[in-house]
Length: 53
Image (cartoon, rainbow, N blue to C red; front, top):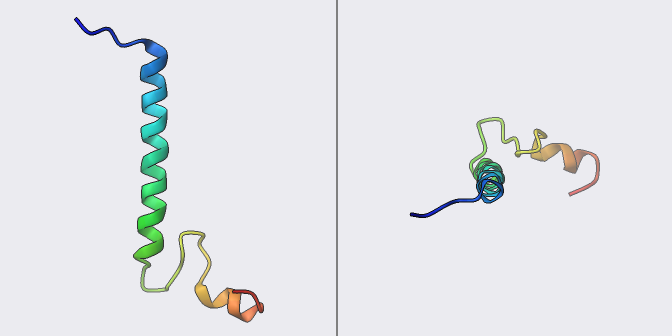
């Protein structure tokens, strides 16, 4: 019988949660909505208006 240590299980759940968040941010950055907002919540034109890219 396979015994899974409690700390290993907590670590595995934590790593999976981080991986899901990162994947969600990556998908949102590639597939913007109609307003062309990045995953940081700012419009892409905002940086150009301020003189930064």
